[in-house]
Image (cartoon, rainbow, N blue to C red; front, side):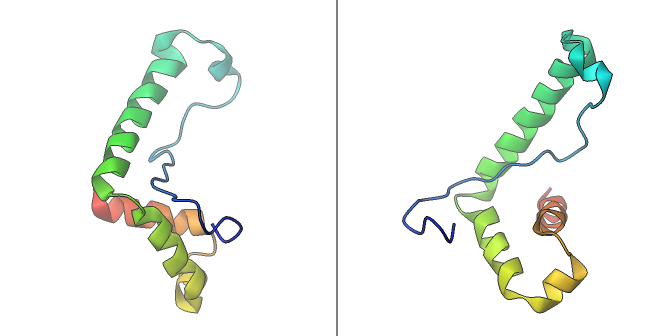
Length: 88
């Protein structure tokens, strides 16, 4: 965002729960990997739209400007996960 200040960043989405990993992910049977991942993605995408444009990017800026938040949440992704759980 800092590198491209004129870009309108609207939505940020990250998985709300762990996705399949390891060799099992290579099996593209809908029942083992892809279907559950699609369902997580659909719910996460819907929630991102409900949060409104720029919501998560404002949270990123809030984290970046706060020493206290950085101490409590060393990674911005941890803070965003926390904020997402508060919204749902």
